[in-house]
Image (tube, rainbow, N blue to C red; front, side):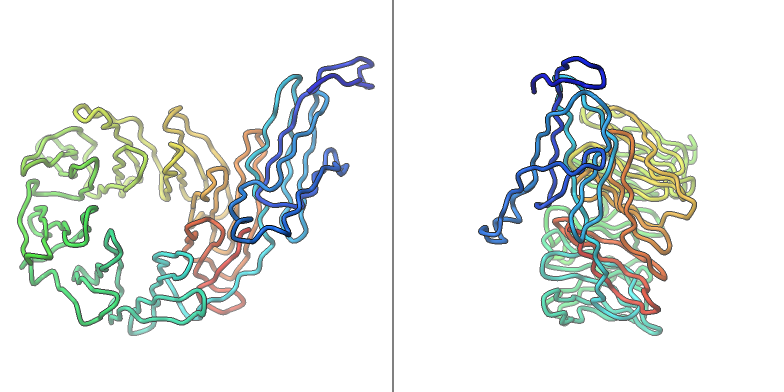
Length: 435
């Protein structure tokens, strides 16, 4: 920073700094439509494995007179980024972090009607493929696109991997089986352990040998041990749902006398009421990593955020009405949520709700990108990305237009997006390279 003569005002003024960082190199920076000449870093001599770890190859600091500027970033083969930014004297305005997304064409990994994309890493992706008379759980190798059939059923199934990914819980019409993905012969039917109809089965968060389930008739919560092949009842009859939170189990139980849904803490076989919620016959927990208990009234679409940080006293921090879709950012205390036509962010730290956008088409999916400043969302026929800007003008990119869009899933580093849908009349599983 320093001083520069302002010809508009006919006087010297103290300058400010504009700091721009992007995930891409060779980026052209335009200020009020004029190309800013900056020293471009060259990385051709650096191996790709090392280059991919350089988070912001473009890091430019520009000295400017105090004013409002139209900033545009361009790179061949990528979508532009632009915004109007104010520069202040003796102050640095940070425009970071910016990701320029590729103008990619989705590649078809697998033909056929797909529904759930279950998980994706660098090497493999698991999907459920639905056909007229069967449902197949497939593992697709992303290197050679070879597929491995893990499980097949004549019914529609749901899939829940164990904490260490060594076993899989398969649900089909409230029939639950445990399978070993490496051997289809090692199958455990949970009805052989607990001789009654069960629902809402969940893995223990600590190992691959314990599960918990609710007996359908009584609502009693059971602990199931796969080593001893036994089950024991815990407290809480009339249980709707349960969740693991800070070494304890919490459950939702309806109290018809007081016409409330009780949040109960289970410890050593005893229950302790820690919060009362409005009565709902369709209440469930939403798992998150933000240190709060999330309970959702699915009938009325109300999310209750409960603060139990003290360990003894609980309180309802806030409630969000009209919520139909949800994603929690596990490192920045922010919740991304949507109703049919609006996308919002709730900041837990500031206790503030912020409307991001309002659409004319129903929203079908919302996702946080790994970088918290970006949101991915879909409508029936489009996939879009929003850059949330502190300067007030969010950047919108229409990444994909298709006949139909199904489910979305990001890979673990946020560089690839997988989705089901139909493009040019072909149904399948698709991969989109983001950057």
